[in-house]
Image (cartoon, rainbow, N blue to C red):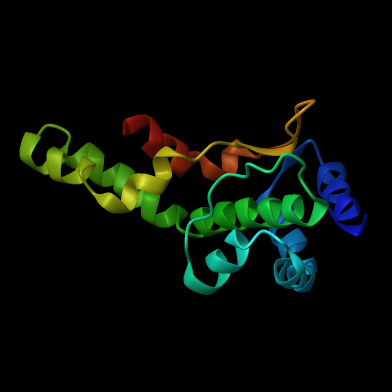
Length: 156
């Protein structure tokens, strides 16, 4: 029940989450996050934490609260990591504009493997709460704070 409270707190902050809200929430529940991973039956989260393995989407028939909490924390942590690299992405947009007429440089630019995670960025984080009946938690990010990422995403 406590994890449900943490998620409700996140939803009640504002209809749109900004980076300050995300950072505060992540810091506030960091200890609970590690406890939840240690106690979670789903081993994908401990593999992610210890071996940095990308977790597979949940296929559980019934989602448990600790797993929902961990997934939410994981997604918000990824968003924060992207945000921290915003200057890099803004620089890439400037680089694109400087090479967009050079086919060879443009090809090398778009083949950059480090840009993969940009393509999957979405300003809405959707966490499945229940497969049937389908219920979801939707967290809307402040798009203004991610303008560089969104602009680069549009270019790619």
